[in-house]
Amino acid sequence: MPSLRNRWRIAFFVLLAIWITSVGVFGYEIVDQAVTISYGQDSYDAAEHALTILKRLTPAIQGRSQRLAFLELLREQNPKAFIVARDSTVELDGLVFMFAGNGRLTTVK
Image 1 (tube, one colour):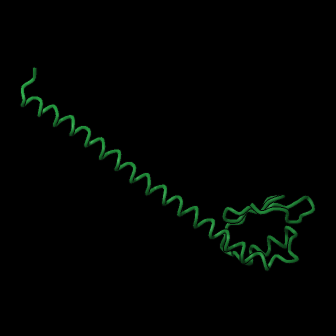
Image 2 (cartoon, rainbow, N blue to C red; image 1 turned 30 degrees about the vertical axis):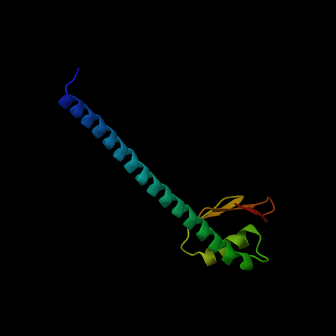
Image 3 (cartoon, rainbow, N blue to C red; image 1 turned 90 degrees about the horizontal axis):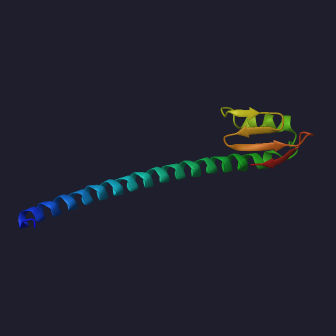
């Protein structure tokens, strides 16, 4: 049977291990929550930016639903933006504008 001094020593090291583990787990949880909030804020900012582009674009798009006229309008309104134009899509800051075979705008994603 362990003496009283040995029991205290064993209890101390067991509690120390539990405390270190708890601090590590809680520290990880705090960092994980901070990263999650940062990514959520980035997603929110991107959605807000896309909405701003659409708000500016909606009144000006009247009569410019053809692909080339639409692309010209996008370049006028966003001169520094990276615009990727393919045969049936035009992409701008996460927004994808899809065009039908006849060149008319069909959907925005």
